[in-house]
Length: 307
Length: 226
Image 1 (tube, rainbow over the protein chains, first blue to last red):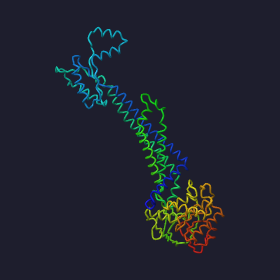
Image 2 (cartoon, each protein chain N blue to C red; image 1 turned 30 degrees about the horizontal axis):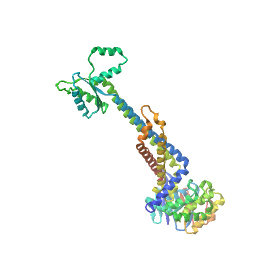
Image 3 (tube, chains in turn brown, cyan; image 1 turned 90 degrees about the horizontal axis):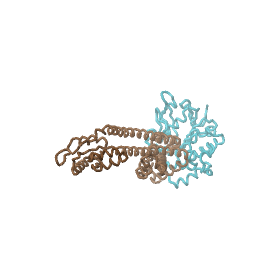
Image 4 (cartoon, rainbow over the protein chains, first blue to last red; image 1 turned 180 degrees about the vertical axis):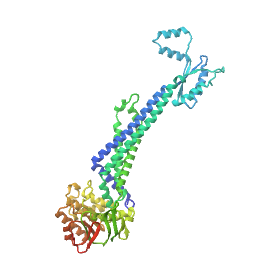
């Protein structure tokens, strides 16, 4: 029928019918809108939880490193050259150097209230601390590889002797392994929870829209009997589904707007993150809302078109 | 124009709705299909509208087997048939005007045609003053008149009225029957199903009597013999 009719007139009528039905069935529309808003809020919350999880894991990852301690005889030039070779490794994200003098200063600062320790240090006369490199991996699972490379004793000074005294990976190994396990488990568990919640939300939305269209089943059968084409019958319902999705998406984004979310979680300013990710979030929420609304409407009307 | 050729409809294993029905209806004819509840009247109508498919036999409209039409052809056929139901089946969220306009929109009529024809057809059923009322603001007789207006607005070849007076009082029943007679006088085939003897007696048109899904009488003189 759409071919036979003026296409733009059909589209205009579909929009008008959809819009009028949306307002006249205001109670059903309101219920569907609220359910869709709940669904999209769950998706938005998951977006934030994902970011929070990532943020927390990064925070923990940042606390972990492998330290390489050098022989007191190692020259700074050798250490710097070794640092450069470490930075070139693909598994390494950052390397920071602490000189013997800096290590001593840090030690003194840490023990400034412990006169006994400081006195013992002074009595030694010489600086007993070693220069070190703190190596951070791109991924915690890569520390073992880095440690093996460090322990393979390839770092030689100008004299030809090894400049590395020790690598503290073995002491940190259990903590790093546990952290890797926690991170993997958190990511896997997080993904499963997110998938279940998203699926549940989608099912709830589908059921709500299906119920909203169930109310109109007699209307659809009458439309069929007066000779309306399936596309013409379906059009207004799909437009209403589109409106549910779009309006609910805007409502959802508005709900999260406001600095009250600023301190929802410690260690992360949610409001700042919301503003920074606004366009990405808009795309996800609006896209999810519209796709859900349209697909659910299309699917729900289909069963009543079979006469 | 319409031909039921040895049509049977059996639901499930052995629930016979109609059996071995053969009859034809000519253009501009007015026929009544009568019988008690469950005799198969509505099943015959549903098969003509392709809401139900016969278990055996075929229903022809002109030379086409209705149940072999594709979707587009079926939509076109339904636009040539106006239907009136016992329960009115008006769209509750649309006004009387919009209920009629919708049938015209479905048939691809222009906005100008709709604006001209809907008030005219509402005047014909004497509801010109209630065109902006919603169905819940109309009486039973008024709702049925809106349904008739919707059925005739596209100038169909056939008007099917399935128990149109079943929910109406005698005065409204008479009004509806007079409107249907007028529609037939103007050249439209009318197929009426009813179990109201007084309606049939007042019409004096061809009567097909069904009993337990079979035709037991086809009387051109309009008698309804119980």
